[in-house]
Image (cartoon, rainbow, N blue to C red; front, top):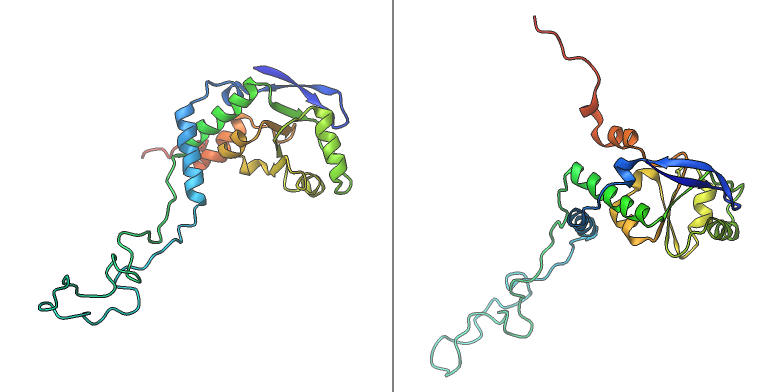
Length: 223
């Protein structure tokens, strides 16, 4: 397992910790990451776009002129798509863009993204945040102290309200909870910052994603 330093918020080292090779040490699977990110972006689409067909626009009930004898092209409605004010042919209608992605694929994509960042030494671990009250200036100084540059993804527990409020005003910082960790956010940021308490491990990830599949109860005996 790879070993990295546990950093103090004020600067310096507070020890070391091993990264799980099953999460931070695999070969990144680029096609899977691409597919999962596409699914995430598709799920964000509202799908509320809508256009009116010739049956839905107002008017057009009467035939503009008789079929023969005028010398003009025959037409049955003034709301045909080629006329101004007519309906839209084959236009967009409300739809659901979400895609079903298997759990194992999402897990592999997340592990691949984390492994990619870890291979570039862009996964940092701090011993803990110590904000007595929300302070954006202290949050900015903390990022400088631990050497987090560029776009930073901070994985912070939901209960740590002061820390979340301190970082959320920084333009280069994005705050998420451990349960919200996803491929798109990992790949969209340059540095990922965990605490010792929420650093992912294989045991935690397996329990959270498989649930009842990992039940340890013995099967009933056959009579």
